[in-house]
Length: 514
Image (cartoon, rainbow, N blue to C red; front, side):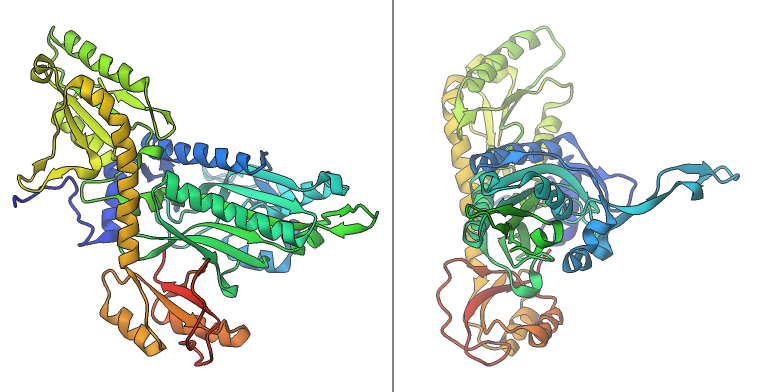
């Protein structure tokens, strides 16, 4: 087997964190903004987010929601109404206290003491409180229910340790908020939206996830229940990729969200909230990336096929461009994965090999090179990004179908790539979920002896509460572990809690996490 020379300078197995940063840079996805914890999302990275946004927005609307928009500034008093909620976000809140700056006499600017706000404004960390105010105004009777809203927005949470896409001080997301007449309907909707997230992650992002309920200490501040989808990254760590919360009547009481029922009585609404963010893009990188850069699942790729004519700044370039344009037009007229094929004819100046490797690092699913000799022979040189290398020769695994055959084969190839990426990630995840650990000492030994790619461990526990639960959390923290979720449909517990020694009541995943 020949030695393969990869496109990145850092391999995943050598330094996964540095590899992740290099993928973002080499794929031209984002860059630091100059403000700590904030990033500039560049066109390729934002194009991937736009695809996720478009597909998820369709799913959200299909579940009966309307999009709206609410202010980025929220009065501090809104948060103070819900004590548990404000406590959960207090350390992350960015606060506006003045509305004007003045010169300080030394060439700088300072807040004008005369422009101090009567009430501080919090820069939106989440919108339960301000949307709750609107719901209280908009809901009068049972006829107004259920009220299902969604907004696409940015939020600010002042993070101490940041990493692009995964944990930033400002990020983009959607947040859904609904109000229902009763508990049963609200709980059902919480799980409906969890399923929407699971389907989006697995079908659109080709990212296998485990859907389940978070333990009590991991609930959203103020929620009665929090449910999540958890994805395993290639380093074995967990990524919480989306959450859905049943809020009970907690926020309804705080905001005054109630309605007149059919009997004429005033009744409190039951509310939900749920959201996913640009950390999904980070999840795509760490699920599908390889030592040559990003591999984008075709469903969310801004360009699914990139055609690269090998231009020489000579008169024959015109014929080559026409040859490539015919392939572009033929592909654009076809469908793959339920939509017209997104195909780019890249005519920017530059050497063909350099342009090819730019698109390899970006992760375009199919790359087609066409030179003068290809045109003479009526063929194209085609690369599948998920099968980049010929293991025997150590060279790119080009296929050379005729142009017409490529036009017919590529749509089906895109479907195959989507399925292959999911299958690869699912197989890797399943192989790295470990069971049969029956004591905390065995858990400790497992993680201390598997430091590189330890994966997740399914354990059985008695679901302790209060101080006893706090003790369990501290035990796990000593190993840098967290509880992820109790998977939906997991087999019933049949053993002993590894933390308390009492009979277990459920199974839960434990892992290192982002």
